[in-house]
Image (cartoon, rainbow, N blue to C red; front, side, top):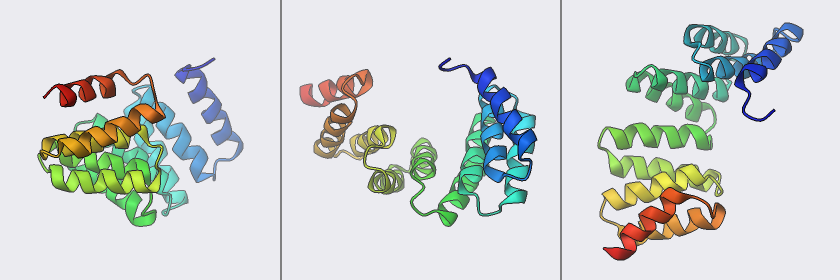
Length: 171
């Protein structure tokens, strides 16, 4: 079944029971718990993953998403930065750093992180959309439109990208 998060969590829990010393299994289980809103359990599992493998960039990123869910932007930023220190091309962590910076009003630095995310993973639709928003906030409508055009080339049925393009074209 698609999008059956409870079934996914049960499956990841089984993997952890079979290979309890596997950091990625713990990271995946922690992420599934986070997605189910079981945040304390998720934190414990993600921290176990990092004890098993302190260089697990994905676990830092997952903890960053957890901190964001809890509303602690500063802690989230620190976790995502730790992921990027380990893996400088971690596109999802770079994108999340950009999101946090954009929300804090730092569009220029946010754009730089979105650009790094896109350079690392050119088909990262969310990072491209976020980059377009940063360009728009910075008054660079031509660059925003170019990114939005790339978004719709990658994902034709992206209603927000089409709406933002229409706004730019009609301005």
